[in-house]
Image (tube, rainbow, N blue to C red; front, side, top):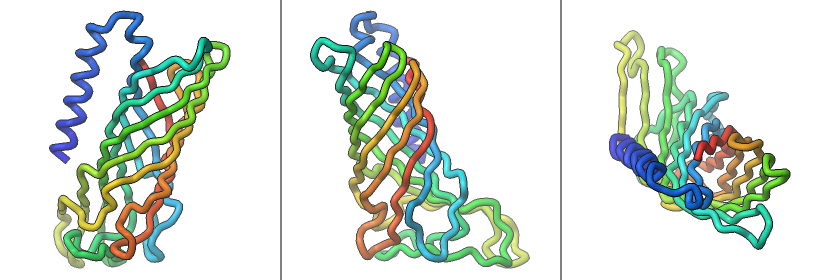
Length: 221
């Protein structure tokens, strides 16, 4: 996650630096936004119980093109997205050709078990403005897997010590994902949804997991 964290920091720094030098006219053509969401897994392995809240984060920068003479725009840009999937399972071997989520023994005391995925996104969106305050965004984005890891905090054996186990580079992930996006908002705050109809893992090499992300978008710039 250090590499993805560095990229996020660099992206935030670039946006902050950029926002200091753009003119008011240019700033209307550039939007910076942050999505804070939870993931609902619409399909999970039979033995997996997913946590109710699976917090995620997305940051994006888009360039806006006016559509005709009206207030509506078409936006295209880039972003970075991170998902955290919490459950009562662990991946048996993240380097195996076939990824298997195994239930955690009920006799073990543990705090959390999660799978973290990071993607670079290319979003595109039509934004329809109503009365200069309300807006609706219909879009689509494609993502490329950039980083992955698992983290487990708890016992490995009964009566054993509590450990924190981190492993990077989960095997057999789909390289590319895509899906539709929806935003409905008032001024700078929006309700947000993204559905990923593509597999998280490659076919026959991991479980079927299709996240539905629901949350809030904040667009301060």
